[in-house]
Length: 310
Ligand SMILES: Cc1cc2nc3c(=O)[nH]c(=O)nc-3n(C[C@H](O)[C@H](O)[C@H](O)COP(=O)(O)OP(=O)(O)OC[C@H]3O[C@@H](n4cnc5c(N)ncnc54)[C@H](O)[C@@H]3O)c2cc1C
Image (cartoon, rainbow, N blue to C red; front, top):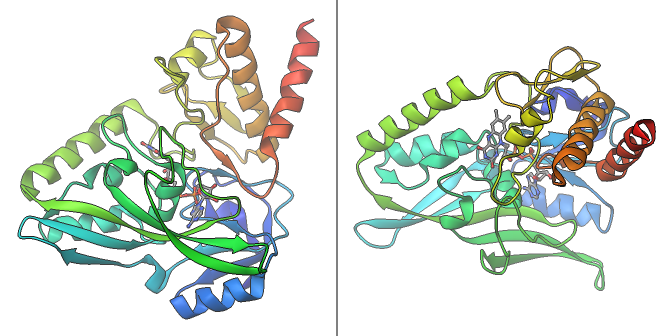
């Protein structure tokens, strides 16, 4: 456990104060001991931190990351052409796909475009335009607090039970994803690698993929694109403090120069307010606020903008 870990080092946005307690669990035994010690104490979970905004004031409940044994996977062939893969939540998507392709398994390549861990992908039903995690996920293993008996239960839930849809998974409050199973097939590995390389190249041309961001800040509204609406609202390139809306892709908000969480939230509020005012569309954040009530602060900044416009 690290006391006072800077959270800005633990996320792609490079924003956030300190975690009072940063805990990495690397074995099943560690995890069991940790859950027992936690009891009903609140905790936060983080994978690679590619889709989180941490607060400037830091987080005083334990922040937990799964590593080591809890980031591995195991392939179980269930026929000559298919396999079920047991993936631990801490596994990094890109490592998983690379390992599967090396052993001749295809079907999970879309995950290489999604910087993050398997646990983060389950929690958000991460995906691309073409494919979402729920298309290959059979079951997820989750640790859930049983408040009645003051203990943790580990349960396996099917993807249907988790009601996975676009960037949404119905996880019980406070649940920790421990792992899950996906299904892959034997296939043309060379063609799969070529597809991955082409997709990466396309992304690099259309998105500021290497700058400090969370990818898409807002989920796309039904039948439209958040980036198009923010662009049409005239906000491409707009900045508040050190945070800027990318010129290349208006749904990417960049930490350009020592942005604070407040800069980022104010910029989000500006985009939400202007898109609602100009097009009557309410944008839903895709970024997750971890360790604080970001929705409440967002609403407060939006109210301030509304009052200033009256
Ligand atoms: C350049 C860039 C491009 C991106 N492109 C895409 C894309 O194409 N598609 C897409 O879907 N996303 C995309 N993202 C967002 C991000 O990569 C995904 O959401 C990814 O799944 C986040 O995984 P993570 O491990 O980093 O999760 P984190 O960011 O660490 O966490 C995200 C949320 O999941 C929760 N969480 C994490 N691990 C667990 C766990 N084990 N148990 C319970 N809850 C957990 C966290 O508490 C938090 O609420 C992009 C991000 C960047 C920076």
